[in-house]
Amino acid sequence: MKARVHVMLKTGVLDPQGEAVRHALGALGFTGVEGVRQGKVIELDLAEGTPEETVGEMCEKLLANTVIESYSVEIV
Image (cartoon, rainbow, N blue to C red; front, side, top):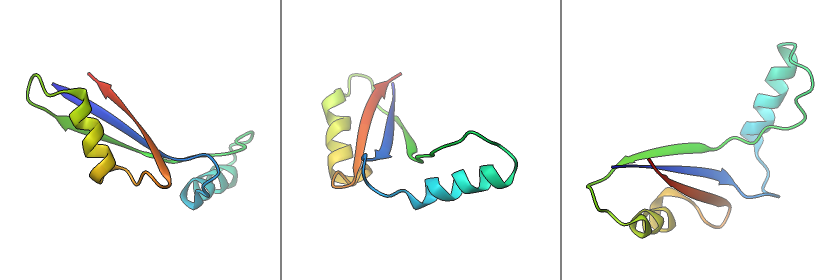
């Protein structure tokens, strides 16, 4: 069983890495990009039957900084 965790900075938190990507895209000639938010995807291989709540606990304790980041869990 696999779980995919998507972690993104919360709205209102400055994203300097996303801003650097937006600027670089403009420098490469890509127009129309008004904003970029960069996050991360963490893929977990889990034992069959692992509850989704366990993945949520992992996020709360380690995988996401819940002060400035939000996350979503996808079981695939």
